[in-house]
Length: 313
Image 1 (cartoon, rainbow, N blue to C red):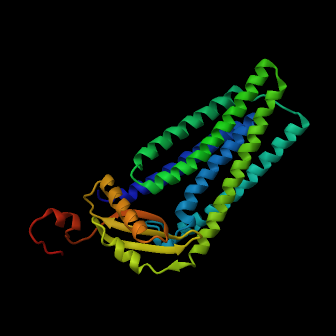
Image 2: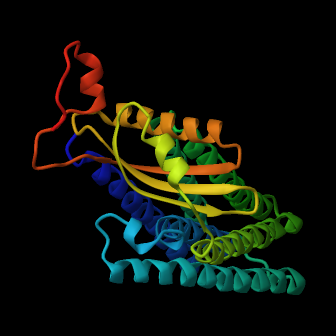
Image 3: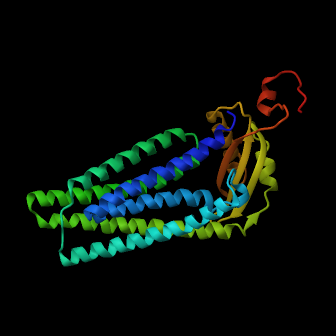
């Protein structure tokens, strides 16, 4: 496995950021050129997805818990985790006010065919990416639950935008002006979703900053995790209070010869043991890394497979 765990997590983060950033630029540029507010609001949502990834990586983590990330990069990540949701909210508010103005004044224009095509392509790309990530993380119950919750909101937003654009185009074809309100109405609803998402991200950011001062003792949790078969060391563990319970962030190392599937199974066993033994724990986030040492060693996985006694080095 060597350093495949770390590279996979980092590749997943950057792929998500660059993918959503590309969708933001694509939908935003076409929406701006065509003057379509529904597509612009959908672009704001994709920008919010970028902020979600950055907040999840930097907004709630301590500097020393980010492997391979310098302090300057961590500070930049924290700044972006705050400023991007703020800009997204401001952009969504502007789109919402503009949509209301258009509906009140009755200055309605039918969307272009290119707008519908771009919105549909972005929807298909997002669904394909979600299905890939879902199948890749099917053994991580917490990740699947979190992905499903975020994807549900993204799905509703995309369907509202597609429905509004389609309805306005149909109204233009059959010369029924009432259907033309579908596009600005979809933009208004989607903007409301984006504003709510931005508010949640900013709240999570400040909650993460506050949680750093509410750390709990991790001795009992550390002792429990070290009993899990397959874990070599627990490199880092942080436990902090939340409104509904305790959240734990930890980084463990495993045998470099393990596959990613085997490492996910070890991670899942650690989560299950902690949440089963301590009822106060609400969430457990685990980062798996390969154990790298200059000296030979035997992991507990290898020891279990050997019948003879082996001396640990």
